[in-house]
Length: 468
Ligand SMILES: Cc1ncc(COP(=O)(O)O)c(C=O)c1O
Image 1 (cartoon, rainbow, N blue to C red):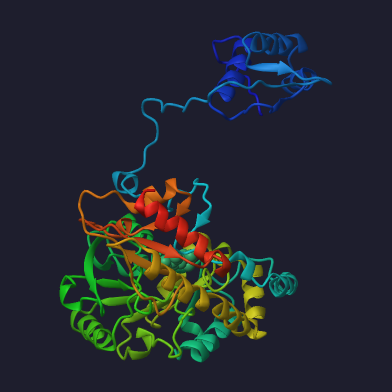
Image 2 (image 1 turned 90 degrees about the horizontal axis):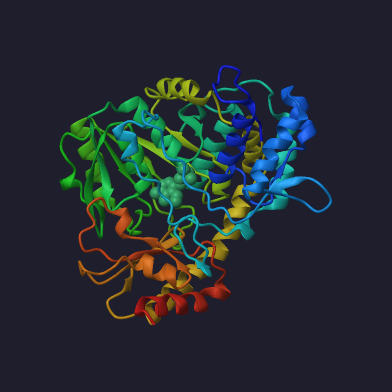
C-alpha cells in the first residue's frame, strides 16, 4: 500500500502513518494476511527515520491490527470486521436520475448448485481452439492506431454478408456499425434519436437493462403490454418517438411477434414518424425448422434499426455486437461512438472477421443449436411434469430460456428468492415488469445446464417451489 506524508498536516508523521494503515485495515482495503512493506523500505521511500516506521508498526501490533510473521515480515492480523466507510458530508453524489437506476443481475454473489438464470451460455460450447487461432491471426493484422469508429471495413462487410445469408437482411456494409454488444447499440441509437423527456414504448414485461438505459437518458420508458401475439400495437402511446421490441423471442415471455402485428407496428411507426429498435439478441437459437423473419425485412420506410449481438452465439465476455441503421442515421451514430470511446477493439474485430469469413460461425451455430435444442425440449417436458399446481411453462420457439408463470397471488413471495435458498438460481419474472402487480413467475435459462443434469435441476426446483 502507498503511504503518504503531508508536511502541511498538523499531525505528526508517526500519527499520519499510523492512521493511514489502521484505516486501510478497518475499511477492508488491507485484509488478514496482507503483508506490510519492511520498515527499512518504507523509511527509504518516504525519506524518514526507520525508527519512526518501527514505532508505527509497534503501536499497530500492540493494538492487534498487525502481527509479526514466522520467518520475518509483518502482516495484517485476522479478526477485524471491516466497517463500511461512511461518506463524508458533502461527498460526491450521482444525479437523482442516475441514483434511481438499478443494477440488473440476479444476485451476482450467490453460490448455487444449479444456475438456471436467463442469459447464461454454456462455456463448454465456446469454440476455444478455432477462436484462439482467429485471435492469433487477428493480432497480426490488427492496427496499432485508433480505428474507424464504425468498425473495420472487413468486419462490416463480413457482417452484412452474414446477415444476408442467415437472416435475409440485405444491407450495405456502410449501414453496419460494430458495437460493444446489443445494449451499447441501443445506447447509440438513443443518443442520436432521443432527447430528455421523450416518450419511448418498451415491452411490459421487458428487458430491464434497456429500460434502465433509456431512463439514464432522461427518457420516459412507457410499458406496452405483450399478449400471445407480441406487443399490443394499439397500446403504444401515440407520442412515442421510438419503440424497443424483441420480435423473434420476446424477452422474457418468449412470444414471437405475429406477422400481422409486425405489419401493424411498421404502419404505426410510419404514421407517427417513430423509430423501431429490433433487438434480435438470441434468435439464432431457433428450435423450429422455419427461420423467424426479422422485422427489418418487412420495413419499406427505413423505420427499423436492427440490433444483433455475439453475446449468445459466442460469449458475452467478447462484448461484440452491431447495429444496422438507415444511412440517414449512420454518420451521427459514428460521431457519437467516436466521442464516447473512439472505436471497437481492433484485435477482436480482426478475430471475428476471420471467424465469420472462415465459415466457422455457421459451423459453430449448427453445433450449438444441436446442443441447445434437446436441452430446451427436455427441460420443457420436465417442467410440465414436475412443476407444482399453479405453475406453467410457456413454450419457447427460440432462445436459451423459457418463462414459467406462477399463480397470481399478490401475497406470494418472489419464487426466485425461495428457490435461491434451495440452491437453485432462476431469474425473477417480476423484475422484468415495471408494474408487476401479482406476477409470481420466473425464467429458467438452460444455456449452461448440461442435458444430463436437467432431471436433478428440475427436481431441486420443484422441491424449492413446494417449500419442502
Ligand atoms: C433482450 C436482450 N437483449 C440483449 C441482450 C444481450 O445484450 P449484450 O449484447 O449487450 O450482451 C440480452 C441478454 O440476455 C437480452 O436478454
